[in-house]
Image (cartoon, rainbow, N blue to C red):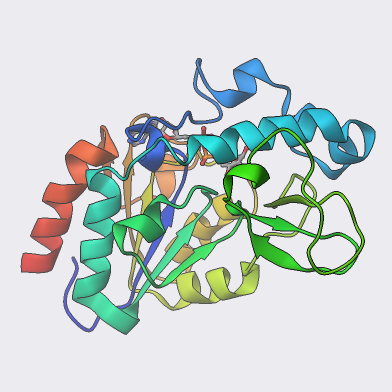
Length: 237
Ligand code: APR
């Protein structure tokens, strides 16, 4: 279904980083089994119990130093090389594994673990130095605020680049969705948009996601095992 000159958009979720050792959210051993998402991933939680939220994200930020890209991230970077400007990668993931694999044309809808943001002056900074990864709060380097927040989109907050993502999906000829359960709006609405605007929709996921019926083609299994072969086929077609 993929041919040179076609526009390709890809949406990824936690499943693509699972084989790198980053836990997904809704699996039996997922992050939301151990933490109530309303305790750690909402603006209300940050206001009510900033220490708990901070420690949760600092642990996830430190984990980035221990994980590596897997063949699924590599395969999508290769697909981007093949399609160039006709390619857009949208990810719900806040890890940096797509970037490390060499992806360039990507949007991180739910933010980035590597960065922190000041709620006073809006300054966003890359913050991966050892002293910025401890459980102590990190002060803003641009104003007097002593407590930066994670540069993460929490529930009830507006995703980054939402309209750019929707436009890319609206315009694409082929939409590929990898490793997401389809639970979270508005990312889970991209597949129906793609389908209704005439894109060919392909899914790759360990389990059928909630919105599986919107796919023309669904490949069930691990992204790291399936995607390299699929990308090879797509680039050769
Ligand atoms: N390969 C492919 N798919 C996988 C793999 C794998 N190796 N391992 C797990 N999966 C699939 C699971 O079957 C599941 O459908 O990945 C999906 C992960 O789903 P979730 O844990 O719900 O993650 P995601 O869809 O990315 O969550 C969306 O919810 O809490 C939030 O903000 C967080 O961005 C996240 C959003």
